[in-house]
Image (cartoon, rainbow, N blue to C red):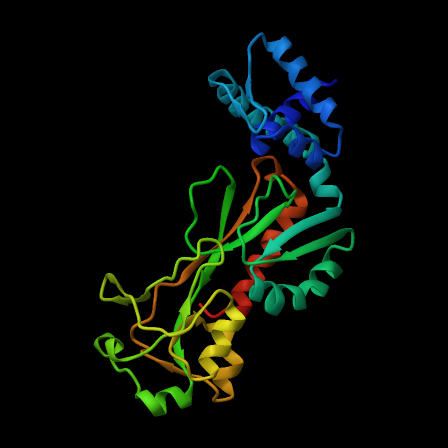
Length: 300
């Protein structure tokens, strides 16, 4: 087997922490992956992986070798694409994942424009609010909203998502309109629980240079943006929501913005992709197009 192929297989095993998952993402038999790792260990003269029945992890030598493999794989891909990128248009399938409402309301409606610009690229668009494992699920890039956890993935900042405070006219008529954060103690919120952790986040606002938080009273807790907005429309409480998400409701008078001087800090939007993909022309052109799309579509 070609040496660079051995490096790629070894790197995928480290990333998947499992021979079977690595084989599935590579589209090869598990036996081929095991044989490739054994051959590589024989070539370098060191044990690179700890193997158990449930998990595979790199040894100390394996960790150092993995880092070197990443650089070598990137150098080879750059060399292969040196003359190809300027002349040939990007092609092939691009597997993308995006949060639910951004995917449905912004990305999907704009895809015909992207596909016209790049007729040789096919899009496999996944839409979910859960945290997707790019390696195990063979995803080329994923759009994340909010702070990132520590990750070895390549991150490209792609804009910010402004948040506003809103309530329905029926709620405000019944409970009054809050004028300052001190008024929040007398109000109700629709609580939002993270789909991945189940944790209910506090109400947030920027006051001067400081970020303030308050756990609001709430009789209803939801874990999807659709339910969050629906409960607010029903008069069940205040919510903090991306401005683009409720723009039609604001324009129709179904929701009203409140506490305009006390908004939460905008959420960062980041495009993540595996290290091995950072030279992919498909990912590059999609990232550029997506950044421009979000810039034009989402208020800053």
